[in-house]
Length: 155
Image 1 (cartoon, helix red, strand yellow):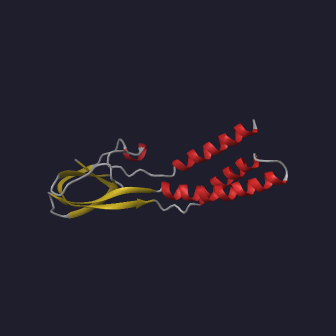
Image 2 (cartoon, helix red, strand yellow):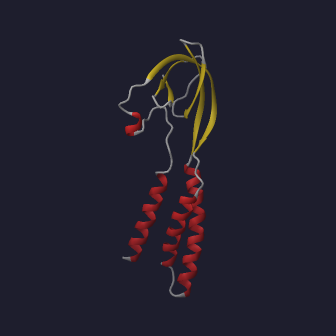
Image 3 (cartoon, helix red, strand yellow):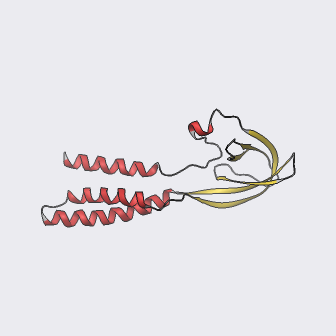
């Protein structure tokens, strides 16, 4: 029973870390904040595309805490008495390090900085988004802009 609870706790914590990562895809919309809202549509063509790395501003604290707790709980299942205490401390330290690294790596995503020349104004704008849609220079595109100022480039 104790092992089942410990394993369940670890799974919940690790699944929770996955929820920290944002998705900046050009083709996915975030629930209530991006759906069923009017968007301004502008047409233009791609001037340039640059590879970028989109990184969340995550400091790793949540991952370190979650990993430390999970490692400590799992370590406590090893041995008895003093050995269990040593395993708990070791598990907590290793878990904290692993949790920190996991959170930091989850907060990164490959992306593109897409510069578009708009047809109506000849103005150049740049949009950074996830690298789920590739674009070529000269390609005709639409730029969709929400009332909050966020934008995406689509075909």
